[in-house]
Image 1 (cartoon, one colour):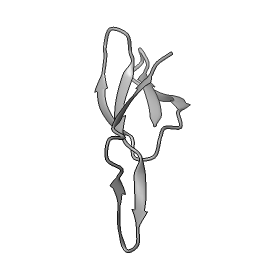
Image 2 (cartoon, rainbow, N blue to C red; image 1 turned 180 degrees about the vertical axis):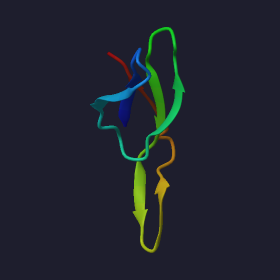
Image 3 (cartoon, rainbow, N blue to C red; image 1 turned 90 degrees about the vertical axis):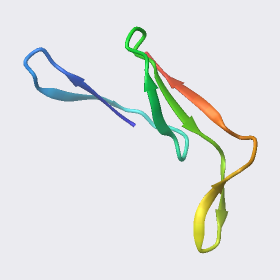
Length: 65
């Protein structure tokens, strides 16, 4: 996940490239705490098919300072 900041002059800069769990998708940003919440699960390989989530492995990751 790439974290980007918009500076006072309107320009953007990369603050960090944060490694996350495979399949994690951004779900929400808390504007008060600046925590980012990502949803993911564990995945299993399936030959010739898209990887499938393993049942009961849903996880919320919280990324913050």
